[in-house]
Length: 289
Ligand code: UTP
Image (cartoon, rainbow, N blue to C red):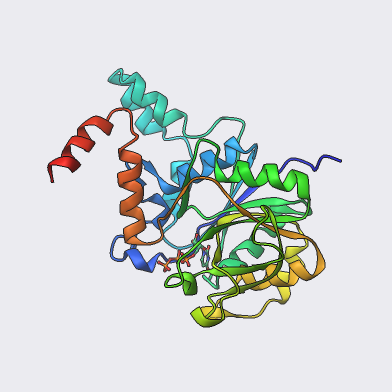
């Protein structure tokens, strides 16, 4: 039987973004641009492409610009209209399709990703939902969320996107233990947050795209602080995997870790090289260096 479509997408954007200080002292990390669009807009576009119609942002201090970005900017529109800058007016007006609904919930203390997801419970309710971490970007003709939605439709349960990560970097991620690394999707047996290199169960790290069943909420309520003294989504998924099916899926595409400076720079170069207005000039510039 076909699984119901995923309508709600949660964007946990309550983190402090300390790796980008001082840039993130007063503005949201998720508003940092890749060429001409903020990270959060790429993530919302990916969710819209995957069929989501309700965007739920779990925000915190410094995140007001995210609300403003998805709201109407009346003064800007009047100004652009008066100057007959119609292309720019279209861009400012069409950040998201009018049929898409945005809700904002404040995470009063940044207690961790798991806590941020729990904050979304009153809006998500009792249905499966998507989670997108905007600082993870995947460049592919089919968005990463669409890919895992397609997989989840077949498998049911929960699905998380995973990527192969080098042994040096694996300690920064949630890492899965799966039944068969040759298959795709793979049934998750266990998952552990930031394991020491020597005990990491595989080289498959969770990246910021999930489809979760609402059963995660009562588990999160009971999840104590884990790695980094934060309430970790990974720890709750480990419990979920004992109760229901959780699958890991190796997605297609190039993944950029835009939560790090190097990742943000790589994404900027990658997207600039494909940008219709910039690609040729930018390539020439890079070659000239
Ligand atoms: P990160 O681990 O990247 O943390 O969070 P961060 O605070 O954003 O950045 P650094 O490490 O200080 O530079 C992963 C995701 O979880 C969200 C973040 O906003 C990011 O999307 N998050 C994290 C929350 O929403 N709330 C939290 O309490 C912690």
